[in-house]
Length: 436
Length: 164
Image 1 (tube, rainbow over the protein chains, first blue to last red):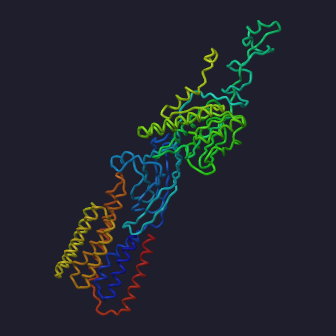
Image 2 (spheres, chains in turn green, red):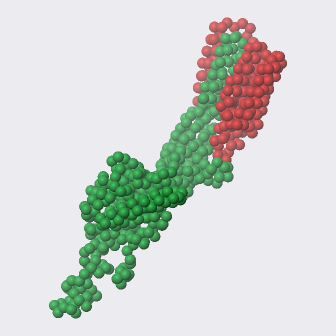
């Protein structure tokens, strides 16, 4: 209840009682309360003119990395005797300081009780950390009271700040993909077209202008008609569409365990690797709704994709419950599609359809069976069930492979870069040249 | 600092009320008032800050009843004032709980106690003064008129003072 209301109630009760009983002593009792109320109203802050600025020690961080938020409050109005400042921290971010005094002194806190004389400023800092996501700091809440806290006013001052917690990006050295169609610019992906390159493609008749180094002397020796030159496979950049499966039914498991973070990490690492190779990469997050990052090149595109991945959340909807509604028109024809998904039985048909439409598909599938087993208690029934489910999954992956889809089955306990290196890396040019 | 002032306020308030009742021969209510003071202290210790508002109302009711029954006003007035100070300081202690360890709490406490002390002294002085000023005959209508005039005057005074 408001303090002024309690004081007013007591004061008027005593005065009314004094008048009703014609006892001056009752009115005398009310006088200290009158003095209290008057003092409160007289010294109540007239105009509250506060300004706030915010500075973050870093705006792009990795999960649970500490960030120091510094807030400065400036009082441009009359002096304020008691101001309770509370910076509104996004719910998912965690203050580093716990309730202990030493911890608060070291890491700071978002709540302070201060006096703010006229034209003065107050600066405080605190440390936060949080999981992957995009967080917006909007306002600082302040409760201003007079000398005796008779009046109280709450104001919210805007002090914007943005913090992006990006997924950790694992560096992948080489990811081997072979889309049917490539773009015109030189890159690292074999283009199935003869020309200049490093990998042997074929032999053709010598043409004026060919370097003598390219002459295939062995083939030329077999023919009396002329010389023959070696042709190499052109290496170009390609269009790569990464599809991140964020459906709840594929990612979420019992007791709050989720594979989604692993899928996000895999998507981030793959996007980084493809962009580093010069490819044009787009990202589609397939969850409760579609989140599409238009394809692009380079570092700017890497930022866009990481922003999108920072905001990605698993979700479920009737429309996107299966991969049947994957909008293939977003991806250029015959381009490379990389699907990051734990995969379900009914996802086979849409994948086969993708393949039939001419897309080259790479499936990166975090293994849900091993993931679940890692936290379930060991026992006869669970072991038996896991064997059955493992067999079903192996069968499903075999069917996918038979449809011409490249499959990377990833046990999330193994580092992703090592798994990629083992299964998807392209040997260096000199090793390919010696045919190993 | 605040805690000492709070404990003193509650002891003085409850003590003077209880003494006034005891002097008038009402020993049982005096014991209840002492008990209320103890409960108030315990409630503050256990951080049941809402109890201070209840205790303030109880103290005012006890002081008002005492005045009506013509117990010595000299004990009832400190009782009401002690209740007011206890209520204010209890809430101030609660607000201080929001302060961070790095905040200058001592300065806030010092300034608040000084102001509350001045206001309490002023209120007490006015109350004592009013006890000595006696208007022998005052018609009810005149009293009501004077109160309205006082309310209007106080409003004007507050408005004028706020301009400075």
